[in-house]
Length: 228
Image: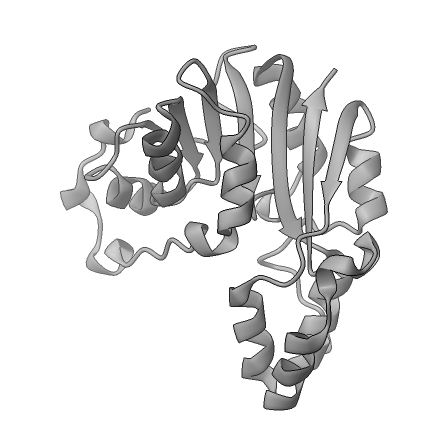
């Protein structure tokens, strides 16, 4: 189903409040890395596209043929007004996309919301062309849990982030792919979150060279995986 088929008048008023942080969670340096994989001939799939802010940005920058998929109809409807891409209602583990139909997939802070992450990886392989590329950015499980404990969330409730990984766990999940890992450091929105817990934590975070630390200590995991 494309978003242009949806009727925005059918949505309740509270459903029209849509938050799209994709340009924050996909910072400029990562967008530039993704753009280096794109051209006018590229078919790009954005999984968990939300209101398609990032989707539309990448299309405007590269001229690529872009498709966005999300489970949230209000977000898709919100994105349709300023959109030059196809937007589809669907799940990451059950993509409404034909076999081998895309060349690049981006999943920016999406895989952690998919209950069956292994099925998502299988689906990504199915819809990618031979040699296609999958970009994943997701919270590091260790860093995520430390952040929750710092907020005094002692139960480590993961009702929102249902599939979290350590670097080793994600490497194993992508064992059939050629992997290139990036040390992303601490993004600005992550600095703001830490400072929100306590000013001292924010002060320390500003002075730690996260991008130089091992993968195991990175706040986020970023990997470029190539279909073999």
